[in-house]
Image 1 (tube, rainbow, N blue to C red):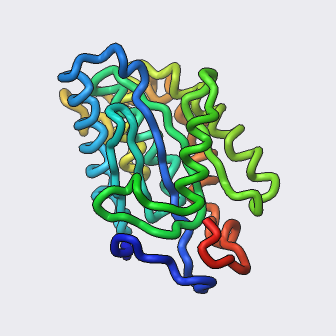
Image 2 (image 1 turned 135 degrees about the vertical axis):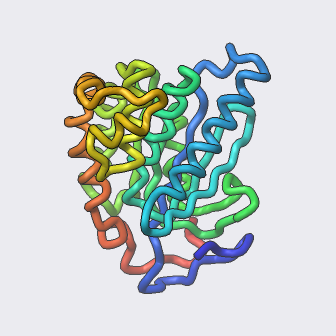
Image 3 (image 1 turned 180 degrees about the horizontal axis):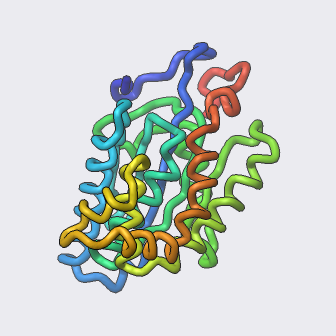
Length: 243
């Protein structure tokens, strides 16, 4: 359920959700023509829409483009934040040989503007935006959680920095095949082979995923999706309008 514009989340509600906010900016956007930039932006929007419609449980995504090359996503299922981040990058790399940096912020939201997500407020938005601002050129992905998460404040971004190194090495073909695997976690290599246009052999899919570091990516993906983020991040008490 999405809140109406300007609505406040209930104070200390036992079911107060933990949201994932993805903030990103397109890589080398200053070198793009206006037509190329629009193409990349449209690819990002389409990828987010496809992802939201590809899972049995409701996955609500709101994407907002702003400042030309910047974007922000609000995701209601925190566990899928890493999978969505990788999928967006895979689709850009596969379709256009473009890329984006991504910062994941996990936490509470105070207000949600359904018409323009970037105008929403709360710690998930603050954490995501600040982490992107502080990201160095050594990495393309990072994450941030509230200080109450303890040691996870260090472990989570460190894990995503390693994931970033794997994704940076993807070829266009590897990104294409990885995008199908990310969208369909239960698909076999044979299934993925038949989804490609034109279809390829199962062996080709296996080789591409191996070269893309797919096996290594399964552990952080599973850890992200198996974590009970609400139990980990929901505060016992919340100060009124403290964000």
